[in-house]
Image (cartoon, rainbow, N blue to C red; front, side):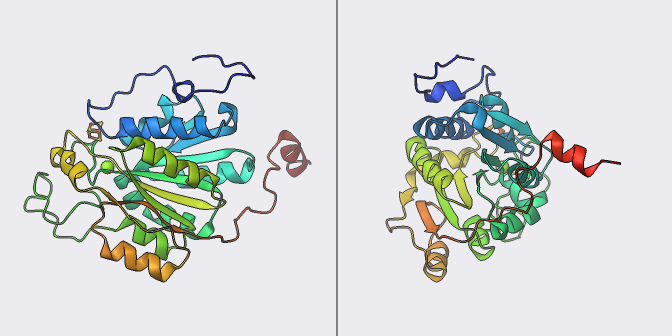
Length: 278
Ligand code: SF4
Ligand code: MG
């Protein structure tokens, strides 16, 4: 890993580790890695002041590919781990990342409560509408008529979640959507998400070239929302429901009290000495 001097600003590449990603060539997750590292470099955040917590899945491998502190957790529990870390170390910039299966299926309950709890962290769902690591099963964002999975011949027949709508109705204070075909645009969104005080949710449309090759056509349909972010939840809901899921940008941003539990930051050895004193 490159050693940066205190006087030399870190570049995006300095936030990458020496591990070579094992993602398939063409996977959208490469661009999320690029966007995260660009955002951290733009904000000149010291690597030791940042932690990236992930769940399980192709996209959750991303923690190992950065040079900030990381924790590759268990399936669906990244937000629980991140909440504990933020409670203990409120001084850290906490990023959380994972896939649509990890975050909206087994981790769905953590997601809705993290939205309403509003701890100061940024959650990126790398959404490819499929379970990639387990070789192509339908996820909570898969369209009902997607037929290529042997587990659900003829499609699931179940309407998918709308992640932005879930975040809105669960009380998230920052909601945005980016696209991996535009890593610079995604990096700009991440900068704003990280700077936002409270829980920031970013849905990153990230094609799975291997199991959803048709998603390579997404770039033809992506467009900007075209409206300034609103702090009006009703207006945000109108925009989210009128959209086909292919519009990108910051949808909603509002100031709510940031939750930080009592005793936060008091996680040093002295506390354990105190609590467990006989
Ligand atoms: Fe990316 Fe899909 Fe390959 Fe997983 S299976 S690394 S999501 S292209
Ligand atoms: Mg997925």
